Image (tube, rainbow, N blue to C red; front, side, top):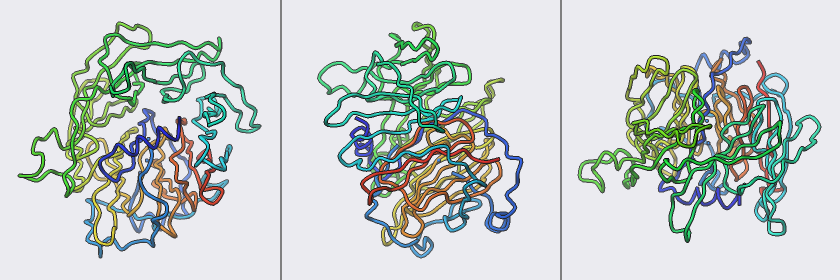
Length: 448
């Protein structure tokens, strides 16, 4: 079930993290209008940016905006933005709401969700099972009218699926098939496809692909599906990353998790390739493949491969010495890392969303306590979404990579991580409803 799966993912992390969002491989869209009314704020503080699953922060732990310097939190390299540097977003100017949906009581009911937006502007609507009704259904919903076209029942369970591509002709999800008594944490990857014209489902698997944990499968620009086979698993030291000499683990591979990269064809089940790359997190742009050495720990180096020439470059992102990589994305010439970098005096956290160029220059870091963020949360390429849990500053924030604007779009957050894949220029967020027992999802189109 949806809520139980999110809780399980949260409980399995060794750190107080914000789980990574699935990376989107789309060029950021240009913005022709310069938001001059924010120029003074951005100009005075520098540039900024940040964005897919779940959070271990408790909403009961709100506190006033902290003084990071007094708490001993180190300052990141390059330009730094805080939540206070954001300006209020204006509906109709900055964004246009396409639709909203409210679940009144998610504590006792799995509810219904906006799970994404197709390339032709229909909302993927998911009806999750509850205690009375075990049905798990999907529909395509017109955001203007709310009219739903329910899809026929698929051949596979919908309880653990992740969108891969929500196109105009087909809808793709990755899912896993497990056998045995449940003790095995790895299974076989399957691709679930819905043909929107024939309204028929199909399932594909690859006998030559190694068994996986539940993967974050990504569709590459070449039309192949890329997945990570677990390679190493790190254990964070008590003092945070990096591991110091004489610590619990001195092997570099133990400084975080890593995977071996494989790819598969969407048309030939026998076309399976070991790509010969070991990575932590992976992202695609239309022109490059970008990856780190590790994730859920010290990221190591960032690598960039030009997909046209095969040329590779690598650089040190100059993240903080205790920074634990939890979110990763790339779009056009920008790379975004979401990080937890330790807890200091009075429980003040060093949370960061670091933005770099694909050649390694520091662009900006959004740094504050009790925030998370990354690029393309659920797939908003070019828009960086940040969640904040500070009393007085709680809410969602959006940083636009195309014009460096940084705005606050809501003044509350729900205690659930909701959202889904969306095309360029769209963003989703959720606010608290029914005294914190529920949530309202908002799907908005960013304005040029």
